[in-house]
Amino acid sequence: WDVRDAKSLANYQIAEANKSVEIVLTEQIFSAAYGASSPMGRPFYAAEAGTHEIASFRSRGYGLNGAILAATGVKDHAAFCTEVDALTAEAPKGDGSPAPTPAYLGGEARLAAPSIGFAHVALAFEAKAASPMRNILKYCFSLAGKEAGVSAFETGGLVGVYASAPSEGVGALDAALTETLTAKLTPEIIAKAKVMAKADATFKLDCGSKGLAAAMTASVMETGSFTDAASVAKSYDSISDSDVTSAVGAMLKSNPSLAAVGDIGVVPYQGTFASRF
Image (cartoon, rainbow, N blue to C red; front, side, top):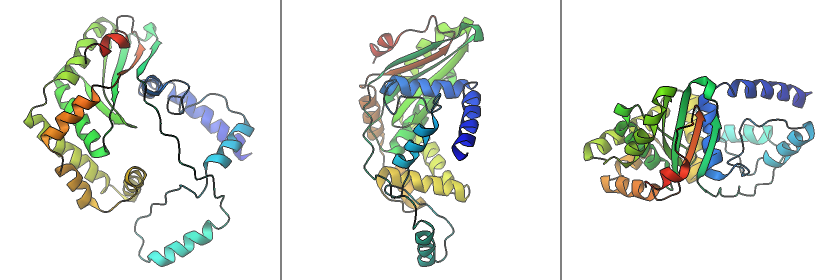
């Protein structure tokens, strides 16, 4: 009955997710980047899954090996560890084998829906850089594209830009996205982006225990450790302007990933965008 109830909740969440253009576009950009049949490219909000498949996935994927425990406000560390050991004594150990490294491909995913009268387009690239650099790149592109109505995002090793327009303005999205990604990043833009990115990262450490635990977990997953806010700030301060421009150059050499949803008849295909970088 636990699986039955979970399936009912999941079906509700899937229905709600499919109403959100942001979620649908996010699913499409991962499909374009990693391939629709890859673990990273398959929908997070998956369709039908049987009770046996769900139970089997849980037994394979969830266990103590490879798990990360993040806790805040612990006054007696030894007592806390003793308590955790007791609570997890009978928990499944799990496989513990490392997850395969996702292979970035680049490509496109298009979902035409002319009747909505709007187009939503995202263009992303592989960013082989640590999270501080990816965060700075996100703010650089956000600043560069602000006047054109272009915003930027960073997620799962991807850095990209996004824009939307009603049907009559879709033709302008192409130039807006391309010009944002190829804009010259001045020292002023980079300096402002670094301040904004560092503030974003440090604020997450000071927005309650849940936010702090999430930031700690993300740090352990990426680097294997977490120290303190001062170290987080230092990781941003150590990045130079030349580091940023080099990261942009390396990023734009990867095969772009294009996701387009809505009234997208005039949105160029991925190959057209790829020829511009």
